[in-house]
Amino acid sequence: MLDVDVGRLISEAEDARTRAIAPLSGFTVGAALMTGEGKIYSGCNIENPSLTLSFCAERAALIKALTEGERLFLAMAIVSGDGGYCFPCGACRQMLFEFAPGIVLYLASDAGVKKYTIPELLPHSFKL
Ligand code: THU
Image 1 (tube, rainbow, N blue to C red):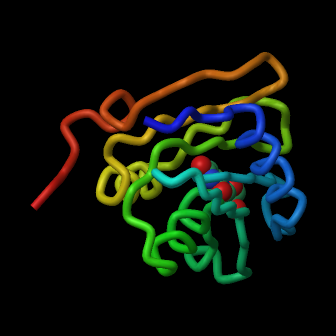
Image 2: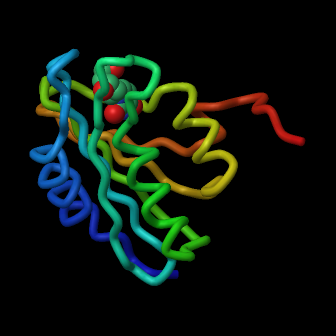
Image 3: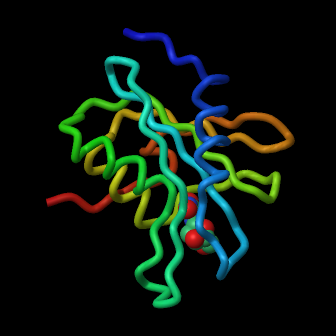
């Protein structure tokens, strides 16, 4: 199993966060997703005045990777601009459960890094 360079993953998420488009909330988020082969896809949140069209950083990274044909994911780092931990929203948890059920999430804040799995964040999840 490939080792995850958590420091690098967090720094890729930080880099992606600088590209966030968040004029409505002012809350910027960056995510970096590592595949089974060690490739990294990053994403940032993209807001839209029609609020329901806004897109989270985690799903942006996941969609980028899936559309490139990636199917195996090992880890994701998530950072936000307020210095606190950014827990993925319900929609992102459900998407990660569907496409990356074994992923390890690294949430980075000014206070350090916390590690979570999808079953921890989305127990009793819906599946068909
Ligand atoms: N957001 C994310 O990008 N990821 C999360 O896990 C939570 C929320 C974004 C969506 C919106 O642009 C802003 O943060 C405030 O909700």
